[in-house]
Image 1: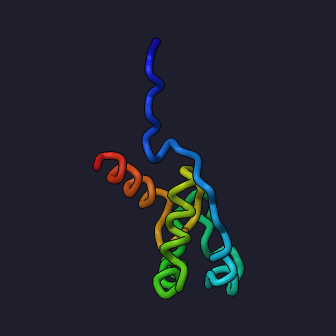
Image 2: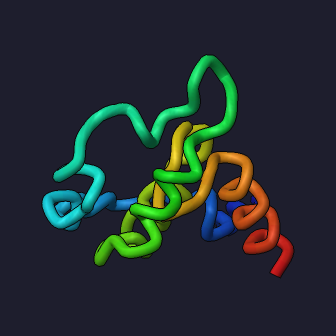
Length: 91
């Protein structure tokens, strides 16, 4: 009989509490500022807005819990979030 493999933290299901979204500046501004244009880079202006958003850390954790999500979340691009995930997994 084999012992089941313990799941790593990034493999566990996440209960995504999205109550913070109402306070997000992006929800108040609207538009597609946070989405990459034609597969290009997201707007630096989006990162500036995220930089002063009161829920940017909640937003970042939300995006980190959903690998593959695109656009600017918590002031990071999907490429930057992939680097964060790799560093977390390594530690």
